[in-house]
Length: 118
Image 1 (cartoon, rainbow, N blue to C red):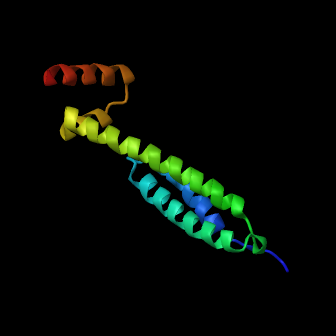
Image 2: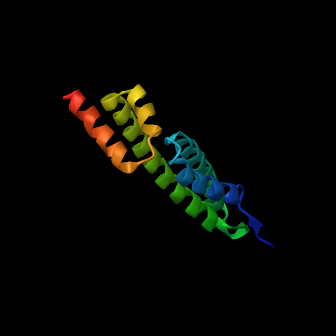
Image 3: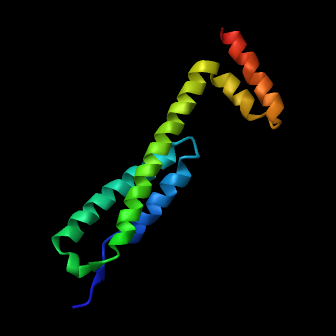
């Protein structure tokens, strides 16, 4: 009997990769892709464990699940960093900082904002 590909194996791998990339976009896309990868990987693992001899491609599922977990953790960290930035320096100041291109000028502006908060 010929082995068939595990359902959604490639999709899980792609979602795991996108979760790591998506954590750089304010964290929200990484959270979404990571959670989807983890849920699909759990379902695919159950199918594989019922009859391992019938399926191939389980490595994609494991790799996608691991990357999904990493992506979720990184995304949570990014969300927390942005929440901290917004609460500490304010939304208007954060938008102003995003327009600054020179690193020295940005550091000077951040120090000014932190001194104003004290």
